[in-house]
Length: 255
Image 1 (cartoon, rainbow, N blue to C red):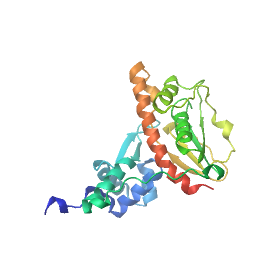
Image 2: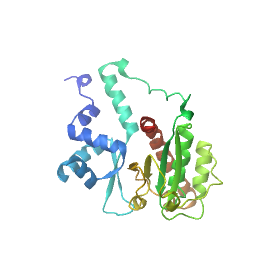
Image 3: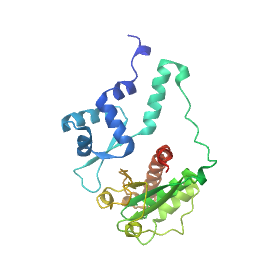
Image 4: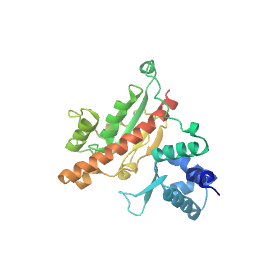
């Protein structure tokens, strides 16, 4: 068979019903395998097998939990999926390689009710304030972002302040960490944890907001000058990608 007629790898992977369900779940949140087993209603051996195929295909990544090293969180690489899907279309016909759709116009959005998003990590000094700042930056008034920590530090990490300023032109130098207790009882539409440890202590909020988890390593863990700052750059880029992919979801649930 001519190579031009081979079914693209993305279609071979995504077409399987169980793998499509796994991809659909991982769009929303990072999950541990036992959580995916519960959501799929299938044996763990079968779910693990299909997760391995998705990992081998580069669509899903796995990271060891920083809270419990026996756990692994699975994350969907939406950018890789977008490229693979575009390549699959182009394999059928060049005209199907479409450019990404432009962002929705901002006119009138500031007058609409804004989606309220809470980002949670432990110290509220690095990951969650970076996510808060980037969502405000990217949303253009379409969402209200706030962050808090279960055990907040005394101040934002200097490299978190630096990476937001240097890479995105955002100034958070005057911001201070906030305790999770200060937002207890507030209403949010979406609550996202960015720390495996903090995920276990996020309280319930009024109105049953949507919950998601982004399993992101603590960039301050390798706090050794230049190596530490590189970790912050990597984490900020990861969070920025996730925030950009979150925006269409927030648009869909705007009250």
